[in-house]
Image 1 (cartoon, one colour):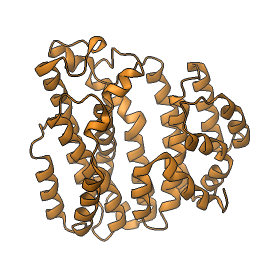
Image 2: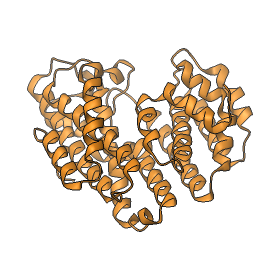
Image 3: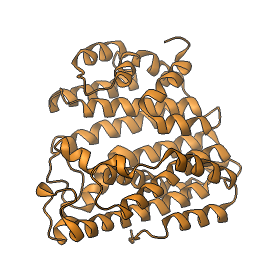
Image 4: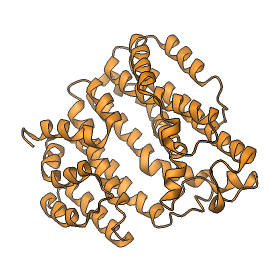
Length: 339
């Protein structure tokens, strides 16, 4: 790949995330390199965690080494050279290329301003410390309860919300002045998006032998996660999933409040948030109305709906009352829990 590190990032991004390849370009130019860099580093941590050929001890080793790379204590070239040969066919070509190009990606990290670099370093460190603890015990019996689900979502997504808030505040004194409103909602934004993905990917995860659903919710409806069967547990499964949809809906309402706390003039940041939020709500609606789905593809939002969401939210991006009305209309049929 040609160009400097920032150009390289832009070339790598679409291969590892179509969603972020759509939303990150909406951000102000001064923010885009840092947010792109942050996403690529988080994706690298995920790649280590998802690689089926690595043992738990190997994953821990590479996570620790990766944290050292970002902090400038370890060699990025040595990290890439050690990890790349161990990657199996389960890792995509785009993710493999990201691992190989890590020395150039972290050069961008090192060139960021101190507040940006500190925010990214903290996020990746927390992810790499927290994710392995859950992955070591991942199994079809799921997580113990909703509290453990909250902790899992924090390590894989909530901390990303905190990092983005730090990056937004470092970019704009006006946003920084609203940190007190944004900070309490940041982890909830991340959790709402992550729980949406967990619900959508339930059956694909189970085929891999893991489950991120909370046992306490399903046990209340007489269900055991070990024996959960798509399309065969009827009303009890529908009710349990609806309870989780209600919790997710509540987090996404916090995500809307977070977005509306961003100054209306920051239309790029608002679009970045709104498009992710809108697609999550629409996915939840499909989950709610299709409880017997057998694969995430069945509840995936169509490209036509994505385009409509992009156009509608972009037209209303400065008008809080219209955005709130659009959210209410999209989520009207969803159950809602109290957080």
